[in-house]
Image (cartoon, rainbow, N blue to C red; front, side, top):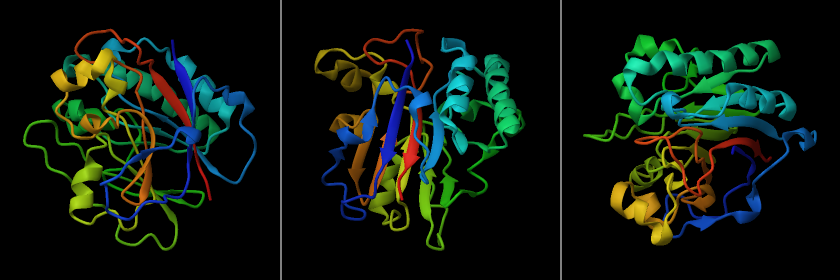
Length: 268
C-alpha cells in the first residue's frame, strides 16, 4: 500500500554544521495524506519520490501522476535509483517518461539526481529519463533555488562539495540521494548556505524488524545507525527529509516500511 505523505520544511533551529544533535520533527510530517486537501498558499510545493528500482516497484505510475495533479505542485523531483539491473533500465525509463509527460502538460519542471545504483548506467541512458539533471545545473522554482549532488556508488564513494556558492538571498534546497552527504558536508563546513535537503536511499529500512536488526546487519550508512532513517529532521542548521522511496532492492518485499511519495511544502 502506498503512503502519500505531507512534509513541511521549516527554518532550522539548529547550529550550522553541528550534527551532534539531530531532532526528528514529528509535527512536520503527515502520513496517509489526501493531496486534494492541499490549501492554496505561497509556499513552494514539490512532489518528491525516490528509489524507483523499477523491476521491484509495484506502485503504478498513475498513482504518482494523480497525486501530482491533485496537489497542484510547482515541481516534481526524483531522488535517484532508476533500476536495480542496468539490463532492465528501460522499464524505469518508461515510468519516468510518463511523469515527464505529465509535467510538460502542467508546465512544471521535472528534476532529478542519480542514485548509487545508477552508476551502472551510462550518461546517455540516464538522459533518456528526461529529468533536468541537478548534478549539472541549478533550477529556481518560485523563490527556491534547487541544486543536487552526485552519488558515485557504495565503493570508493566520493562526496561532492556543495554546488552553490551564492544563493542571492533565496532559499536553497539541495537534493542528495544518500542523506549521509550531510555528515561529510558538515565536516567540511559545507552547509552554510543550505536551508533544506531531501533524500532517499534508506527505504525506511525496507524491513523493519525489532531492534532495527536490518540496519545493523545490512546497512553501512552512518545516519541510520543514529536512528535517522525516515521522516523530517533538524540538524546542522538545515531541515531535511528522508523518503522511504517506492521500490525495493535485493528482494521485492517490504515489511512495516510502506512505499512513499511526498508532497513537500517549503515554508517561507
